[in-house]
Image 1 (cartoon, rainbow, N blue to C red):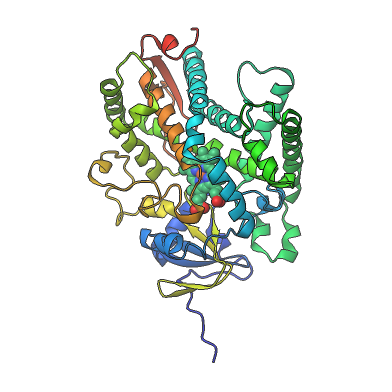
Image 2 (cartoon, rainbow, N blue to C red):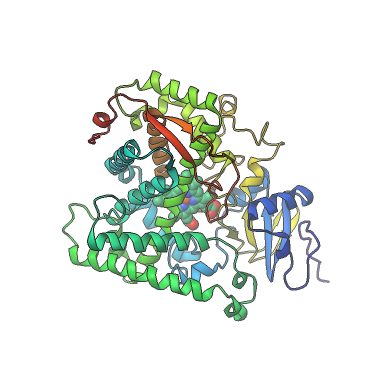
Length: 472
Ligand code: HEM
């Protein structure tokens, strides 16, 4: 006799749409509310797709460590098909192709040596940022500045090209504008839910967002085509091959190169910028935390130089501020969805093969059974507990854990440390008078603050222009 499957607890669903009507645009928040009722392993039907939602450190460990191999695939997402060249990139791919691209990325791009060799790029972009902030009118929109910085860092590392900046003219400027437009559109539609993901393969055509996604893809493809043509023409003229050259050496199929570059650019651009913006917003909101962080900088660095990477290990309070920001405001609160490539059992429940598996870190990071005063921004908590973000402590997994863990973690953390520390060291930060501050989250493929941080800056270091090497 066939045994009935024992699925995890689940709310009542509707015919056809299943539980989709229970999710609003803030998916992580809707899932948190549901799992508070139905438990840390919950079953949902997203249209025709079975889904398992994980909301505790113990269950996250089961998925990302004990059964890591089973959950290392990705489910179908619309952008994977259209924007990522039919899953030929890295972040949305599965199986042998993903293993292969990931191996090349980890051995050629995300190594300590390579990331260290691009320190000068991070410092140069930081100097451009400080220079433009020093000259900016009062009431600076930090999001715009921060995304330009992280985008330039990533594009210079990947393709030896700086796309945004004051000195760009002519064709480069047109490229930059087009690229910015395309990347923001891709990021916006990125990991949102689309109807085509929740119907059987043969019905996917009904998705009304397909025409828009195709239009974005056409612009994106034109851009990457140009990057590749330029690289092929100039091949060998660089003292060291960049990552685009390396990918072109490995893959005859240029779609793999384009898809991988696009996904890494998107993954690297908003995540680090969003972390710095949230940290600044919390510090402007909590002046006593700001004061402590700046006092630490005065003691460790002094007022006559910029903060460098060698200072980081001594800036323990700053590190706690960054961990606390990643806990309370994770840029990717539900990680990137995983998928079970085999049936398995979790906490005594059956998980079917092909189940979309969402690890809701947002629920974990705001669970009062896991964290004391979970909604309070309180860096001091890391004086007493040793949890780190590096994928070993499942109560703190803003970068995920296991095989699918973020390969850009080290680059992301180095960028966030360098930029945040120097921004705090260089300027006094104040609210713009009359500007209301709230800590609500916005909608998007990363979780930005709902309203961009507007701040009033005054220099804190006397020789800012000399220290950061620019003319006032
Ligand atoms: C504060 C900064 C960052 C955060 C919080 C972050 C977070 C994440 C998360 C949560 C995932 C999904 C993990 C999973 O599937 O379980 C991920 C994947 C990924 N991240 Fe990051 N990330 C950051 C910075 C970066 C940077 C700077 C890059 C590259 C320049 C990058 C490249 C990637 C890639 C390529 C993947 C997909 C990996 C795969 O599917 O195998 N990330 N990131």
